[in-house]
Figure 1: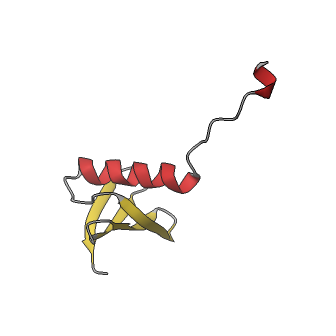
Figure 2 (figure 1 turned 120 degrees about the horizontal axis):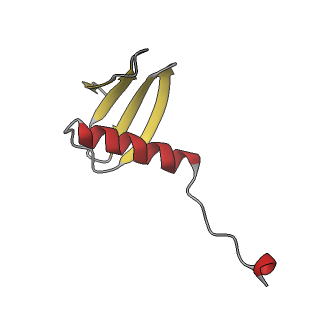
Length: 73
């Protein structure tokens, strides 16, 4: 019966957010190779570490504009 079926594994919050950051970096033509870590710096500011070794700062303005800049590890 349907009630006995196994639950599908769902991606974790970290996997979902990491995929979103990776998509943002691709849209901004930045090399990443996969997000391996991210941390919140401020309300709308994140530091994203990529498999490529690059570290980026993703900043969202109050108007909703996304800014990506290379950060120094």
